[in-house]
Image 1 (tube, rainbow, N blue to C red):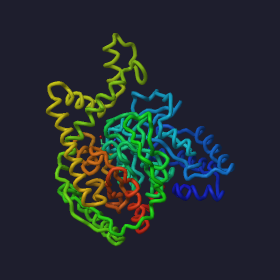
Image 2 (cartoon, protein in one colour; image 1 turned 60 degrees about the vertical axis):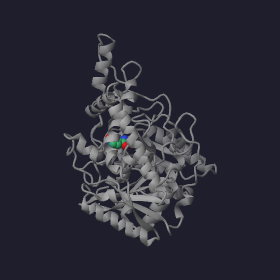
Image 3 (tube, helix red, strand yellow; image 1 turned 30 degrees about the horizontal axis):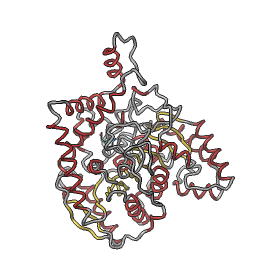
Image 4 (cartoon, rainbow, N blue to C red; image 1 turned 135 degrees about the vertical axis):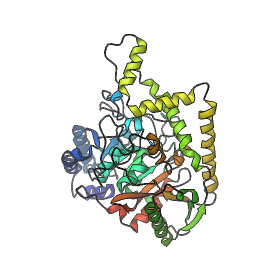
Length: 483
Ligand code: GLN
């Protein structure tokens, strides 16, 4: 039962082959048995899951249908869930039970999903390895000595290990696509504004975007359908109609113009990954796509710009965690300043403190123009590069990451080495564009992802291309041994 995709589950439930309650019990037992090896969950919500499953079964018995009705999922632990701990992977929020549901959580619950739990993540979504979590590192099911990627490492490891078919995640600089690549999943970062950020605890508000992590493009389409749409509670939510993503999966790729940026294949890219990317290009050419070399000349400036903008926004967003209103509060504060200092010093981990310091520095009066303003100008140049490229091509293709998943602890003493691994993913966040990572092969037994980028609101095009590719390849069907 645990091997089924969301699409297969929907068919099985519709054909009354099993109930949502049976499936939920099977998956909860599997999580109890296998998750101790992975640490992919921060909280399990068994009672809620069983009551949602029973309610979904009752709705189906009453004649209701829907691809998500009775589908088990989990939420990254930065989506607020009413009455349930929403920790953001931090000691700061270890004691925080959200007073309301995030829009994404509420929309998916209304569609009939069953919440099995809240998944592990890098603290406040800062990281690429899921090692900065207060709840401990997550292991990659493909090799337990390696990281699963981050910051949505818990969602990725759980779905890859077949503990559940799909999960929500968020992507500020690659945190959906990079863990998807590291664990052989399909993950989609939507256009900025496509999915509501209301109730999604902020890291860097102008970059954050929620999206689906699943094993197939078909399943990403199903989950995105339940997440996307205008939300008056989020002032950056965009009022664009949401297309039927599943209906769009079968379009022909004949004549599809794929741009391959020459800057993607410079030094730093593992040559074995470069080869797998070439294989994926050939597979798409066979389906009728036309390949064109393009250039994204400002790509080299994207990492420094991102690592100014994201910490700057984080330093502002995280100022609300002051030990006064909610979250961790130190023992016996002597005065207000002591309360702030010790609550924040004890509640935030090292990486979060590093980013707050970098961000506060970049925003300070004397340095604002030199760092923050400069970074914003680079951001515009990065966006302009994409706009010029999309005049010539329909999608852009390249590697998701320069290297496969590294060993646990390998980059702990060198944060910049980890930042450099984000080179292919962060440009989409700076520009607000949608991006998808899908399985493209293996290097030393570790999964490799190919990334597709599309113009604003063309999530459907990404899913269509990925689905056609997956009908003609079988990388996405490979299962990690032991799971
Ligand atoms: N690795 C990037 C960072 O640490 C991206 C994280 C994310 O997308 N949440 O900021």
